[in-house]
Length: 99
Length: 190
Image 1 (cartoon, each protein chain N blue to C red):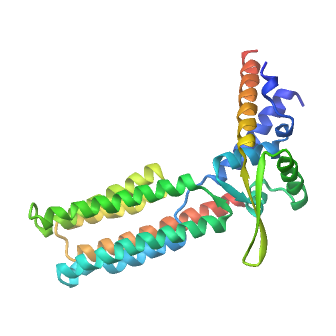
Image 2 (image 1 turned 90 degrees about the vertical axis):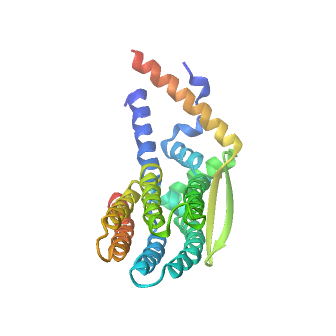
Image 3 (image 1 turned 180 degrees about the horizontal axis):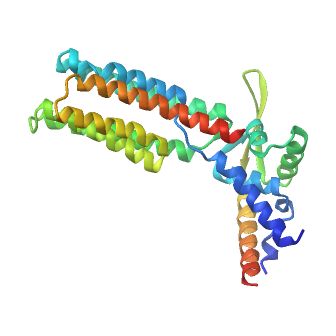
């Protein structure tokens, strides 16, 4: 059924969207992610922290124009998990469409 | 909610997030640089000698290209989203166009064609580069391509002050292209 490819962390649509965005771009900062996902600071921060602690994301914190800025990038592990999750979802949706 | 409809909703949400993030656009600063360069450079053949025109483009072209590469990189950083692949694409497209234009200049230089024929040929190359950019990079860039193609026709049919008209048309097309793209993005964000 493809369930073995699915990742628990990526079951949440915001975390899935973060990983998909970061698979498309090299780096995205917190403000841009917040604008794209229409999430609050707290909620987005919590999702990012979960992905970071699972080592799906790497974060670089810098000061830009005297403001702290966090830039996020997908790690190799994150990319591999996303790929397997996407494959799992694809298989599942194919099964559903067959019904 | 069934599991299937949750997946479908989640995937729609992801698509809705990724689509606006990948909208390409011509930055205002880049459009302004080229609008100024063409607004000064294109009318020159109507008013000054040919060697002055050549000198202007040999200096202004590469400087504007490098300035725009810098402005593009800065804008990308400021937008909070870095896309090295897109930057490489842009650099390769416009770099190739500059290189081909330099090679085309060898034709009159070597006496294969005269300078009078080389000018419309270069305009045709510019038009082609913008139309291709409109297909592969940002659809709005096709409009300056159309402006340059109209300019080519004006030159071929020897309309008076054709170069000045092309310069104004192209500068307007570049600025409008950037503004329309910006307004569309603002409307989408709202």
